[in-house]
Amino acid sequence: MPIKISDYTYQLPDDRIALHPLAERDQSKLLVYRQGKISHAAFSQLADYLPNEAILFFNNTKVIPARLFFKKQSGAVIEVFLLNPVSPSPIVALAMGAKERCRWHCTIGNLKRWNDDLDLKFSKDNLLLTARLVDRKNGVVEFSWNLLISFSEVVQKVGAIPLPPYIKRKAQAEDTDRYQTVYSKADGAVAAPTAGLHFTEKVFQSLREKDIHTEYLTLHVSAGTFQPVKVENAQLHTMHSEQVIVTRHNIEQLLLQKVKIAVGTTSLRTLESIYWYGRKLLSDPSSEFVIDQNDAYRLSPVDKLDALSAILKKMDREKMDQILGETSIYILPGYDFKMIDALITNFHQPGSTLILLVAAFIGENWKSAYAEALARDYRFLSYGDSSLLFKE
Image 1: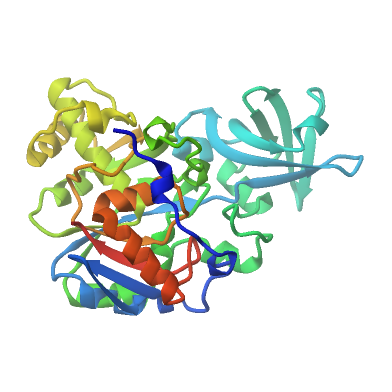
Image 2: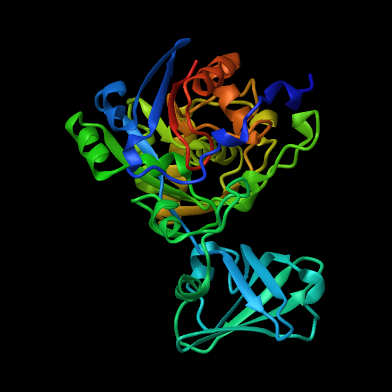
């Protein structure tokens, strides 16, 4: 039966989109949804609404300054937006460590003004960065630079933070710090895992006082997270792919009989992808960690412990402490969640894949939760307020 995207839209006034972060991260509002009931608090009170000894799973990806601006002698500006690496490796962590040169898939602003034989250059201090267009059709750009430093260090010097398209202003100094979680670690995202933006050391301390555990995994958020669903039947939407890194410790913590809470939709998608990877290993022990958007709907479910144990067995066989993979998991209303009991997340765009995920998690009650947030002047989207949702 088709899932109509028009059923998952709502009116979001422009003035409800948060254009700037609050002065203090943890002073954002918190809407708590549990068993059809809604209550309100400040995010600093999060621990009061969580059970003792729960486990919170965080995405520790770090937003890179993915917007690079080159100015031609004519004065025309070419914007090159990094999407995903091509060489020396398609693995983000390795590509960010490249020295001297690398290639990335990019979106290019003002592409028609960039001739194939023209090298674009940007200099700052002693650094000279050169960009060459090597595949116009696919937007592949080769970067080279004169200093013996990593590409991560290059973009930190010359790039700009890529704010979401709905924040209609230029990136400012505050965004360098605030469009980044305080626990970010692994370079590679072009969008922040925004549910984590509210956490501060004070909040972490309150979690420790309740013996609530914290666990970190990685999903490098891609620009596809902002891609709208353009077809009326949401099942026909093509889901974007993102790279994930999962550790042995992550799997071991998932095996514990505790309440498991995803901090953000990216953490949730990673955890559900882990389950489906274990399911694939049970059928074929040689399976790669690649989750297609249809896997959750074409594969028959298995016991969660069996799926997780299959991953640990593979890690034992191949003597690995972490697994790199990619996921295009697509969570639609009707999806049966395997790994997660609760979700901390911001308020999302109308008609987006993230609204579909929230609707899958708490059912039709997403409408009343969003209506309540609008009525109570909650701030929406990346720099907006937060919610704690317990699974129906």
